[in-house]
Each structure stands twice: as structure tokens, then as C-alpha cells.
Image (cartoon, rainbow, N blue to C red; front, side):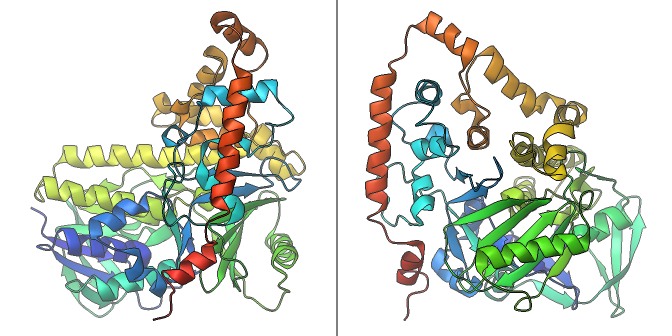
Length: 514
């Protein structure tokens, strides 16, 4: 029976794990071992709406922690220069298209694009038509009242992940034993890790060890030897350069901008902007990437070199063969990582925490082999799905202007990767092929993937497919549909313009002077 838990590693993953044990399994004895001098990145983190479930189960309210973590609200992600290198952008607004209060369905959008290509061919027109959060992004507004159904507040946060971890430590983890020390060795048996030895001379035993040591994966990989499997065959970006810049505009979305050899993130916090260049050393070197990033910073932010410091980070894309092995379970980077493009870093953290906590609760700490196997299967499918999803942003791009973009669009065999992966039955490319060429349509069943497909103009009902549908169902009522969609978007814009800007709303609420 598991009752004594040792978490190795602090940071956001470690303290989020500790906080969950504190709030949800208070009868457990929890110790967190944190190295006192591990370097941190500290450039800010962008999250997804799924984090709301973590906040809910811990009973955390925005007004309690956001101010201390310099957090801002986020309602979506913008991708600039991904479709083409001409300043064009498309949005991924939160809220699944099937859950949006649009007047017509996705199939109608297909027809409209077909019959009115000049009006409905902008990469972002689909998101604008089906999701009110897109207009919040367009005009940088927040909707405090939710007076209209299309503005479903499926939101997340930009936050300082280091400060968030510290806040949890100070305000939630009151009964967690905090040990600052380095792990020097571990005693490994057939059942797993019996104990760890610290540089203080202390030896700590546990029923369950939680590995939160990041890319190092000290317990799972180093001591237990669990194999790491890379995603580099479909996600070649393996380096990042990060820095902090002054905040200029508190936007309600994360922006990703395609450059020659990768892309740049922009995460607006309340007190600063976190930005970084994710790039691939197959096509450029460290010095050239750094110069390209500096040029971008000066052009976009107006900040000249010498006014900020750059940090170089090596990215370790991929996953370990198992997340839970013997008496060690990995959370966050120590299990796996998909490059930062869709903000899945903290997503893998809190989703894994939720699974571990629920398993321990329902099984009263009596975790059997089938429990571990099922958790491993879920974690494996999840991270494979994240890798799939991120790869779509490159696979469907129309960019061919550099060797990097020609490689990610023309040379990577995405289909082969998915047929050879652990779950070939989940191949999203095969499903998309079925939707497009068998049913001659792209439907709501694709969920949020629709924003990626439509944003990159992978298209919809066209040519022969449209003719077949028209023959089967008769001529579409496109005039009526056009009127409904146009009125819907007009009303959305009018409503949006009445709302406070992101900065105004935050000053009225989270950052209001007391």
C-alpha cells in the first residue's frame, strides 16, 4: 500500500504534484527533494484550457494566485507566417467548433468557401465564423459577463511557472516536507528504487517515487533504465533561445511566428514578455539562429541587442517507453515532451498528476500491474496525440521559402511515423483522408484540429466532392447560409467592441489597487 511518497525535483511539476497530494490525499506522507542550485529558464509559460480542471480540483481561485504569478488570461493561440511567409495568420481559439454557438454547421462553411472564394478564403475566416473567442483575440478583449453564448469562457493563462510553483509551496503545501539537497545515488532492487541517498548524507525511502527532474529523468531513465523514444522524425526542432522583454501590450493570446528555421513564441505576462526561438540545428547553427532571433526582437519589439540576455536550451522531444515503472512514476518533462508550439508542457504535467491522484484515490493506494499498465497506455496515447497535433501545423503549411520549411512540409514522412507508432489505429492522417476523400467533407468530428486544417487551407468540399454532394442532396442554400453567417459575425464584432481590453479587465479585477 502506497502511503509514503517522495517527489524528486521542484519547479512547477514538482510543486504542482505536491499541492495535489496535499489537497486531495492529505493522509499521505509527502517529501519533496529539490536541488538548491538547479538553473531555471523562467521565461513564462503558456497553458491550455485543460488546466482549469487542475485549478478546480485544488480549489484555486484566480484572484488568489494570479497576481503573485504575474499571470494574464489567454483565450487562444495565433500562428503567424505558418500558412505562408507573408504576415498571414490563423487562430486556434479555445472552445471546440462543435461546442460553439454558430448559426450553421461546418459543412455549411465548406459550401460557402466553395461558392464565395473571395470572401471566405482568408485562413482565419473559419475561426471567426464559428468561435467568438476569435473576435476576443482580434480586438484583444475579455468578456467578463458572458452575455452571449458564443463567448464561452474556455480560457487558460499565461503565467510565470517558477512563481506559480513557489506560490503553491508557500500557500498550499503546508504539510509537505521540503528537503533541499542533491540526489547522489539510488539503491535499486527488482521492485524499483528502495531509497535515495542525498549529498547531506540522508537516506530517504518511499513507497512511491515521483520523478519531476525534467529532461534529466533521473529516476525513470537514469536509475531504472526506461528507454526514451524520440519524436525527431516528425518534430525536428531541437533547440530554443529564450529571453525576457518589457511588456508592451497585454494580449489575450499566445503568438507563434514562423521564421526561417523554426518559430518564435511570445507569451505576455503582466510584468514582462517571455519570448523564444525554437529552431532546428539541421538547417542553421547557434550563432545564425541567435542573430535571426535578435533581428526579430528588434523588428517586432523594438528592443536592441544589449538590453536583454539570451538563454540557450536544448530540447529533448519524445517520450519514455513507460511513465510508471515499478515504484517510480514520471510527471512532466521527465516522462516526455512535445516541442512548445501548442503549449502542451504544463498540460502533460497536470493531466498526469490528475491520473496518478485519481488512481491512488480509487484504489486506496493498492496499485497493481494492471493499474500501471492502463495509466501507461493513457499517458502514451496522450503524448502521441499531442505530437500528432503539433506536427499538423508543419505538415499542412504552404511555406516553401527555406530549406527548413521545405523539409517539414515535403520530406518528413508523417504518415509512416503514425503507421509505425505504438497506436497505429489512431492515425489522424488516415482519418483526415477519410473525411476529405471518402465523405467529401470535413466535419465537427475533427474537433479543434479543424482550426489547423482550415487555417492552412487544406480545404473542404471541392471539385468532384462538391458535385457528388450536390447531386445527392440538391443545390445548397448558400444564399441563406451566407446571410446567417455574415449577420452572426457582424453581431459578434459589435458585441466584442463593447468589452474591456485585456489590460483594462485585468486592472479592474486581478490587478486592481486595494
